[in-house]
Amino acid sequence: SSSIEASPPLHTPRRHPRPPTPPNAPAMALDGLLVRAVLLLSCAAAAWAQAVRGAAEKAVRGAAVAAAEYPMHKVPTNPHSDLAIASIVAAVAVPIVALGVMFWLKEKAWYGACYLIGGLIFAAWLYCAYIAL
Image 1 (cartoon, rainbow, N blue to C red):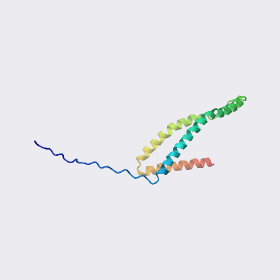
Image 2 (tube, one colour):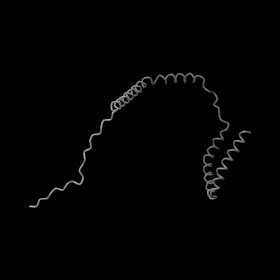
Image 3 (cartoon, rainbow, N blue to C red):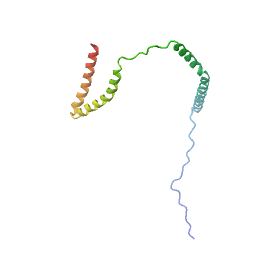
Image 4 (cartoon, helix red, strand yellow):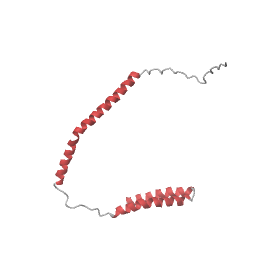
């Protein structure tokens, strides 16, 4: 009869001691209680606000009814409605032109960036000088 001896485990698990209780544990517990109290009060305030909710709407509705007694008879129009079309065109054209200018100046090595920055500053200066006239 052969007896097989049990080999010792490769890793014996260690039992770690329980970490010590921090000295400020009562204060930490009180902070948690304070947070819960604030949460409870905010929920109560939200529930109370639901009951008062219609009062402001009724006051606003009363002012709207008073304003409706004297409606506008003529609707003003903007004489510069072509500016809206120009702004839409500029919103599409400016990024396309800017990309073209950046690719064109990229071929000019380091002074291409200088041209770009200097040109933008010069354009801003010209615009401010024109506005100041």
